[in-house]
Structure formats: structure tokens, C-alpha cells
Image 1: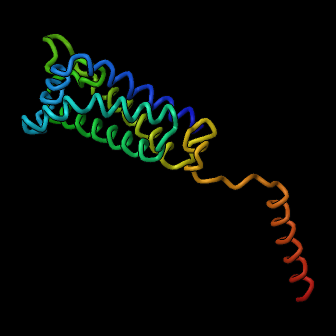
Image 2 (image 1 turned 45 degrees about the horizontal axis):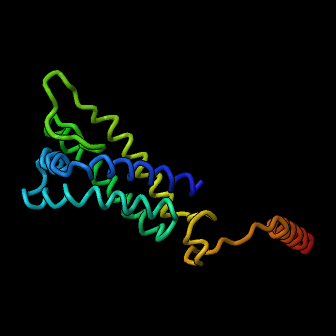
Image 3 (image 1 turned 180 degrees about the vertical axis):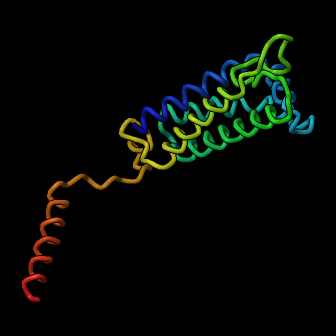
Length: 176
């Protein structure tokens, strides 16, 4: 399951970054349209965000520094949810710029803030899964010994605990 979560989050980030990196001016306009950051910061975010998305996505695909990449992905998704919710609450009519484009919507176009928030919240939850659970066997972290080891499943261990508890309870009952 963690491998699937990694790949979904990675795919979204890589596609989003790739669609923006070819036209960074549009990425800057998309960030500026939210009216949350001062001009120079919005410009830096507009240029840097696509690169960050691609790098984090690639790290998730190969499973290297998986938890760190998952944390960054989760924080990005949280920031996107907050930004979109803020635009919605303030009555802005903008394209989120999530997959390129961005800026003010043309007249007659309606923003789809609700579905964008639902999508990004879902990706946030998947990123949280990636952070919480080991990266899986198909991750470089696992191959390089950077991932925490899972305890192997031993059905006898659980069986022994139940039996011991039951035997102990029987012994205590007999001594009353």
C-alpha cells in the first residue's frame, strides 16, 4: 500500500511540476493570483515550486529519503489546500495553477475550489501514509537499509499470548 501511495503522490507532483516548468512566467502569475505573498516571494515561489515538485516526486518514485519527501509533499498539499480555501473565502476567481496555467479566470468560467481542495486533501492523506509507514520493498531506502525494519509476522506469537493469558486466567480461577 505504501508503494502505491508513494507512486500516486509522486505522479501528481511530477506531472504538476513538469507542466509548470516549461513556462515559469505562468507559474509566477498563478502564485501571484492568490494575493498571499509579496511580489518577490511570489516570484521565487513561482520559479522554485515546479523544481521542488519534480524533485520530491522523483524521490518518492525511487523511494529515497521517503519520509522526508513525504513530509515535504504533505506540507505542499496542506499549503495548496490553505491557499485554495483562502482564495475561495476571499471571493477570488482564479485558476489554482496546480497543473500549469493559473491566474484570473475568463468571464463565464467558474472556479472548482471544492474539488481542488478534495483532491489535494486526498493527496495530503496519501503523503501522510507515506510518512507514517515504511516505504516498502520497492524503495531505495529499504535496499540501502535506511528504512526501519518491520517485525516479521509470527502467528504463533499471537497464539501463544492468547493461550498464556487463558491458562493464567484458569490457574487464577482455580486458586480462588
